Image (cartoon, rainbow, N blue to C red; front, side, top):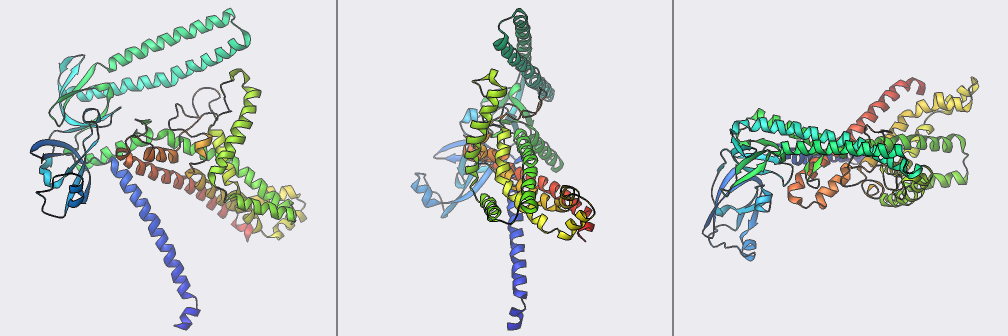
Length: 537
């Protein structure tokens, strides 16, 4: 036993066990997040409950959102009549009934002893709406401009409404945006040149174009508001829902397994590609995905050359003096500075100083409205570049230290200059280490939220940083971020219980984005490692 302990085998097994346990914990966490997040898009069955409480009988229709065993004593203290309960604990059902605009809440709670019967609800449809969440009910009629039409025309009405909505969205995002850009340019010319006849005629032409677009949108909205769906909800009342507010409708109790899977894929696609709605508690997260990826790529473009140049100077040019030792200590210590401090620095230096100077020099005609003197995606990328700079410097310097000096001496002996040796020999061999630093930087930057709240991220961004208007890439705009979206939905939402699954779904999506970016960088690193392996030997 003593010999076995001295051999070091126990430490090998202990290390292997710790690594295995860590992997199991990480995989378990990912599976939990994925299960709770992706399961939200699976069509759950809708039940009809017959509930009797205090002599009053009612019908509840909805999805079983959760079950929990509650002590009878706790219910008694809450003022609930528990005289007919036999056990010490009873199940409490949380039922998602939707119909928020009618019932005032998305959920109701029902105790199991109060349930007289439970069965799948026949003919009940789940209706996805632009506002007020989902609606559960039985479609009983369809009208076109107040005239009843066959209910079989519902699918055609929904398809027509989708096409009209797409046309409205296209006009608002392209024609109106382009017209607004022209108005801004014209106003700038008016401020600089005065009210000339030519500029006034141009202004009149733009106003006429705006009136035409406004009239076109009015007609489209009137066309969209003609049809209505009549639905009977669980209290027996018939509610009229405008077709323009209905995005999708499905009958979950009639789905086959293949139908459920197809619906799940369709809902997942909408989540990834649509814009958010209802204070981020409904709809998709495409602007947040785009903002996260674009900000990380912009940060990578900034931090990589800065980190590599700093590491090359410290390792190849700077001597081993007290000053360089202090610089290395400072770089290492920067990695431990809280991220919110970087956010404060970015707000004070980049936004209020650098951005204000840029506005004074290049955008004076638009003042006092700031262009770059306000938080934006450029300042967010620069702030995170400084935050992750120590990681890239340390990783690159370690890669440079692993390259034998004989390679440098051989290159210099063959007549190459020091700059040529660095560019053609040393840096290519150190590129895997550079990519390792970039991987670590991406992993940290993609999940940061605190500094971004100060330097550019917002709850809802009206437009993406890239569009069809010159200069096409708008680095001064604010943006959405998956990490901030998680915080906003989970803690700032007006309907936290209904939005909780979206927190898991967005978290899983954020992990997926980070893993995708890292796998891409790892693939590039492995390719470079194989390419320059012969030089190392």
